[in-house]
Length: 514
Image (tube, rainbow, N blue to C red; front, side, top):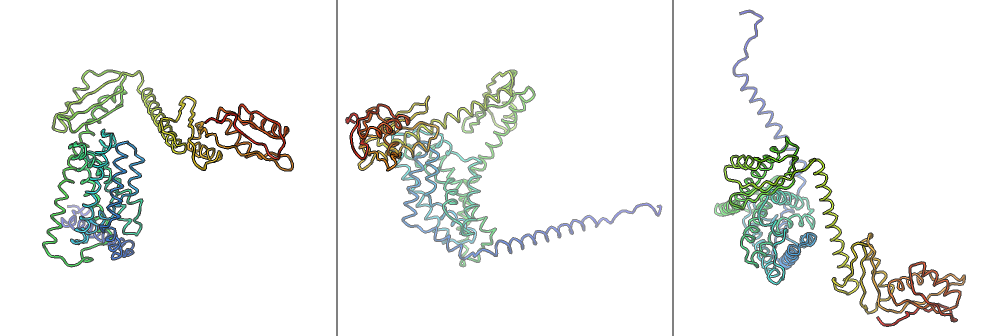
């Protein structure tokens, strides 16, 4: 062999390199762990966190009352339906305390604390279900709204909301920043499904009852587990709690296994639905991509037998075999039959169709916003005028809202004008008019320079413009003429004048009947 020929490295070199690399990896991991402990774990007073969290887990009257009220508002918001009302219910819900407490109890293996948290949570859940069922039973509306239907089965998004809520709630408790906002995050994942459980119980709709209960349990377990993980990350350990027997440890393990069952079932169902949805969507998209078509509408119903997939495709060219090809492809991929309904809409230009679809969606949003504005105007005008909502006149074409106010004891004309201003401020693009009752109109005075009281003139002009009765100005000729001219310029009609002596201009209605 030539002296210049390369020599092979020993066979032990590769294993040695692997061992060196593993040691370096372990060193980096250990360094990161030490940094985490110094920077984050060491800054937390764990005993104080446990004390504060335990206080939030106590079963007191306020907890039961606020949970019941939150559930009542939530179920009404779901029935109406109104997302704003549902969110408002979350502001009252105190569910965060016992749930986060259960997570911390599992993290430090405290059986007594876990039992107390479980009891508090159980009482709150029963109270929420019963009050929701009672309100639903008394309600004349028992229709399954989209808000209710959307909370009858777990989805990947629901699981994500629950997980992030848990992490946020545990972090807030650890850092001493627990409060309403984090409580809302917890309640969003739990209170609406709980209210739907009560709805299903009251209407004896067992699919709704069972689906909402499964969603509630899934979110509950996810939040509890997320809180336990966050607590462990911040150094909460078993040695912070009292010594426990093996039976107590077995009890916690049994509870964890029991809670893991519905979570596992939900995760398997979510994984199955996600896989089916992805395969069906991708198969339809790839089938029409070459001709410039695109998916306009898509829906998967996993509860159907076989699985029902409905899709609408906008395409410039009809494909006779697309439905059969996609159905066979998806069925073969997931290993179970699929019933595909594929509607092909022929469009001259897919890009133009997409633009039209976007414009239609925006028009729908604008129409929904306009309708919501009208509902708000009716409600606000009903409150300030004492009239029923159906007595409020709405002119959609001219964006005009008109309400005739009832007599309010002690209210002057100025009060009615101020109420009109406040409602009008909420709808600046509408002409809002409150027609006042025939209340006395304040007189109009003037100063030494002959300048009329501008505010009194504006109030009289507003009153005259709002009513058909007309008004009469009585006073010195020069002053009443100036006042009449100012009122007409402000939009008042049927303003009469009567000459008379005096230090002020008296303003009276032409007709006194209301």
